Length: 241
Image (cartoon, rainbow, N blue to C red):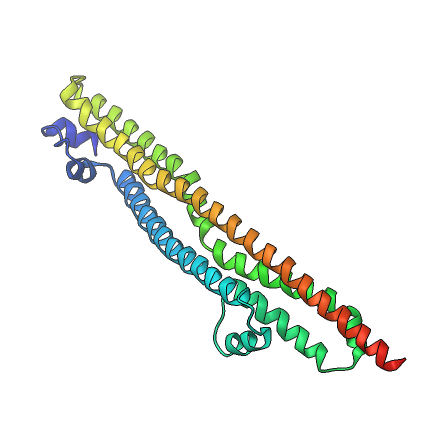
């Protein structure tokens, strides 16, 4: 909104479109940027919600298969032939390291437990990184959105006061449109920031729960393999004796 426009013409129509169209160029840029950030945030929210649902269902199916009593070798052969995610990735990575050592000399078992635990830790880190990817965008929008909107508000109010000075008229009909346009920028900033903040916290909570499930499975599976290692080493010693 330019001061000369207010001084020369009637007040801007106070509607959402009218407030946007009548706003100063800088305020328009702020509004469009915040709307783009909001659309980006919602695309991430929808994508991550679908990803977490898919991951949680995949973990449920894997746990059912793993604890069903079927052979781990058969489960490994089935999963290693297809792309895996979440717990299945941990299982395949650990079993792959186990089989590498199992097919070599018995001395390879000396550090096998440590190698398996390292493989499980790396696999967990990779899976968590996949789940956390782009969540920082939501955090950035949540923290920066209100301040960007406030910048648009401050700029709009400055323009409104310049309009008052140019028109030499302090009536509400002259002041209201400029103030409304300025506050509209703050409203859009909050519109972008509030959902981003809410869903960032929700999705981070789901990341934490998924990570806890992965770590719990890694501990249980590591214990299973540890017992197998001890049994194999004992068998080797008996044969050597």
